[in-house]
Length: 197
Image 1 (cartoon, rainbow, N blue to C red):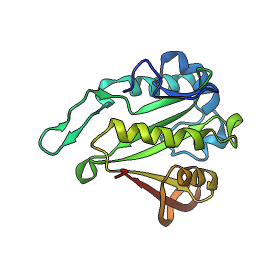
Image 2 (cartoon, one colour):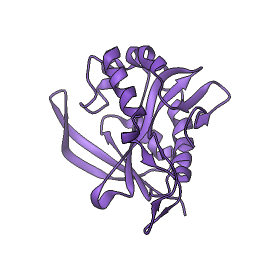
Image 3 (cartoon, one colour):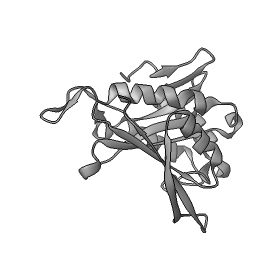
Image 4 (tube, helix red, strand yellow):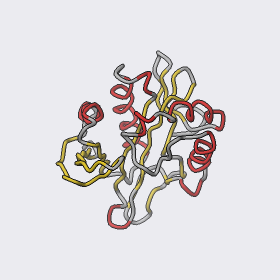
């Protein structure tokens, strides 16, 4: 269960934990990077300022944006408390990234989309390849409602696709001309993982 303790913690100082207001400066410093922003959706502003980080942390901490955890049944829904679904990735307790689930609604209410980013200085070091499988294990255990988690990557972002594949996501297809980032139209690659049986 999420809360004051990290949901994932590794011996080398890497962890996934809930966002805190003390993360504002470090998250703004790391995410105010065009190379990172070029791989993200436009709903994340650029330049990314401390006020943007504060807004994001407020959003993540707001109980109205939490999702009920625990066992799920068609008759009663989820049995556990509502908890956060987006978290800080930390190195020695400094926020150096983010990972989270965006739960869907309507006929897709038993699915979520995963998203993540990391500070550029820790790219290529296997950080997300180590954290994502552990995060997914936590998600399956925590949210009984989940049957499927999806992801999208830009076609040019091969590294993120490799991370997803290592975490058990299956490549599901290519949607040509599906995205436009920085005025460039490109393809989106679709990935999915089903609840382990």
